[in-house]
Amino acid sequence: MSTPTLETQTYAVTRADLVAYAQASGDHNPIHQDEEVALSVGLPGVIAHGMYTMALTARAVATWFPGAEVVSLGCKFTNPVVVPADGSVEIEVAGEVKGSEDGLTTVALTVTCGGQKVLGMPKAVVRADG
Amino acid sequence: MPVDASLVGRVFPPTSPYAVSEERVRDFAAATGSSYDGGAAPATFPIVLAFDAMNAFLEAEAIDLFRIVHGEQRFAYERPVVPGDVLTATLTVATLRQIGGNDIIGTTSEITDSDGALVCSTSATLVHRGADA
Image 1 (cartoon, rainbow over the protein chains, first blue to last red):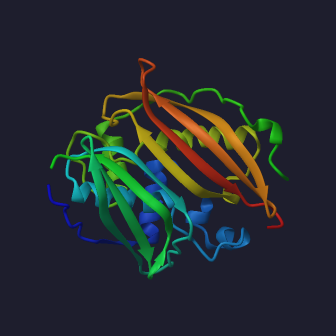
Image 2: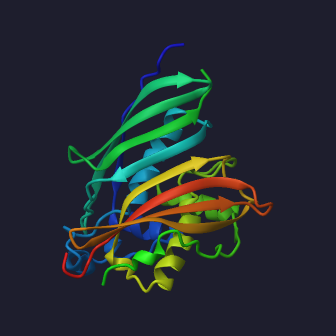
């Protein structure tokens, strides 16, 4: 079985996306909407939900392994993704298959924004065929 | 104000049952630019349940949501979440540390279905930024 090459995925994130995500996820923390509140707690500006970035990571995994069951998924949120009031920021999700055992494939991920890693040791394990 | 250290080990009441509908899954997928074509919900969908449990915990402890930053999140799935599931989350405060005026709160939430079977275990580290931090 050959190790598949996983094509790096790039996603643009806007403030409107964060509003939609807050609605869909139930995380209404104002640091993801309100510049003033974000600055007041020492953040560099409005930041994306960590879970938003993690969801994009899961989206990349689903693109690489269509229909595969995800067995585990985890990461640390090491650097904030600052989302400007206008325009967007890009998040890049790269993945590398680390190995397969007992039908489970481990994927090590690298998730960056502007060249800086934003997630700490993101990893997914999927039940993928072949 | 630091978070009460006696919280460690405390199990909070299960959240109200949450009916997973196709519409909710579709909205969640759409919010992150995906489309939903049936079958399993996106892998991070169970965060909806975990947030529900975390919000209840923060409210019960009078912790301001805007002072919380997400530090870490892990999911271990017993099976995928699918529309038709009725789920509840039960949150336990696992660990509590203080670093540089911030509280680092480790929580675990067990997400179970209407039969009481475990669907997903999830752990979250919440960083509570102190007023002076």
